[in-house]
Image 1 (cartoon, helix red, strand yellow):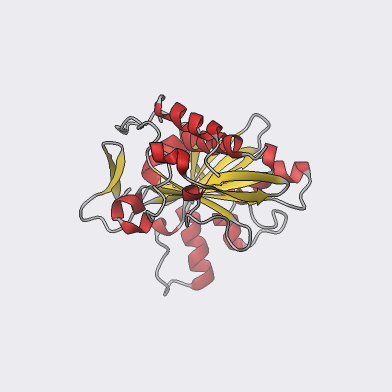
Image 2 (image 1 turned 120 degrees about the horizontal axis):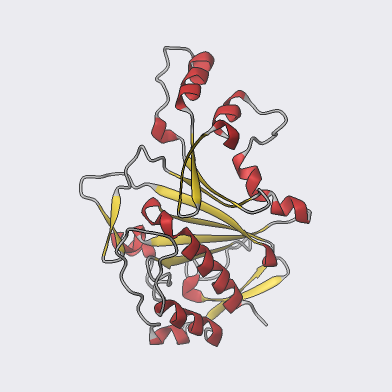
Length: 273
């Protein structure tokens, strides 16, 4: 079964516009028009709750289809937000590996509408907000973190390491090596008009450098840097009852809205009629 015409139209539309959603200082290459072979890639159906989607086979993470347990993970390349050609594994080259963006689509069951809407808030508060553990009070509670700047529509929240160090010494004693700031993620949060988070992104803290840079639109390693800063990005797609989780290098964090738009448009274009 060929890729739906609506998806090809969407891919063509992406090539006609900038991928910049925020105020990125990156110099990104223009998107190429859809490859002619994309129209001949077979599709594989995926069922997510009551909804069925017809994704191109090469859009799946392993280019085969849903996981054995029904899980759906997709994989695209930066900056075009296109899958690799069928038969090309993103592990085959370092270039493809560091430019891949994984997209995990999960259904959320047994929640009321209000519980679903508040799901992302649960990501930035203790497991039991009424009875937080001592470590959760310091690390896993947004209100206990230090609020930083707001940029590209996201506000950064970092661990208060003065409080964390005090907790660590009280709990483990002075003979234990003190905590390292780069071991606890920074949180980037976008709050909706109703005060509920609509996007939560947890990234390697700013104390660690990116480890990569943008050259001609592609992500490349910086020589001599062994670590790459990464992000785990979560948002909801209410019309399908989905929780979406993206993973990518932190250097493209300013383009978070572009990636959310891509996921929403792809779901719309591939929904089986």
